[in-house]
Image (cartoon, rainbow, N blue to C red; front, side):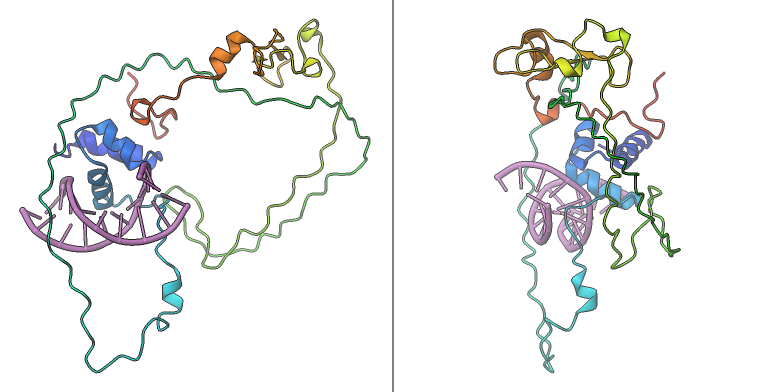
Length: 244
DNA sequence: CCCTGATTCGC
DNA sequence: GCGAATCAGG
């Protein structure tokens, strides 16, 4: 396999989109994860969150592990230089994707505790003043601002107190299962989206032991496909693959 | 163990 | 330039 323009483009796009080297290698096919990483580095598109830290404690305290240097510095242990013959990877014919339409619905967030506790607190939302001191910082490839050495983002300002307002069922959900109607026996599968006037819940009798009815259990619980059979769900930004 | 990216180095 | 082997952290 050679790095054609198109394969490099795919590599670059997927790499910058956050795909892992394994995923990219799998997508390109007939190539290893190492090849992807190697190529990515040669292309100069390194900056990825690496699980391995470059050990920052070395620059500051270098002399610590260094004993008094003897007149004759013993050379570091040489490398074995013995390389086992590369075992030819079993030929992997391109597996048929066989990816049916992505009919998977995201599991709805469990909505519990329908407590319309309308605390009448008059607490004003206290917004923590964030003094923004101008600082020099470099800009990363993704446009993010790098932290300066030793800099800490500081504590995240606590969420301002929210005033709880009793849900006022709109006319659109008259007769429908609203948040207030939820209990252990009825299906909590959301119909529509929160914020929409007709947002409500399924309300059927639950599949015993589950928060949803039998039908919606079928949506909520699906067999996890092996990693290699999954398609990367996030649609690629950066223009993505040509859809035309 | 699995995963990840980084690096090395023979080719 | 390429990528397997190896390393090292999570």
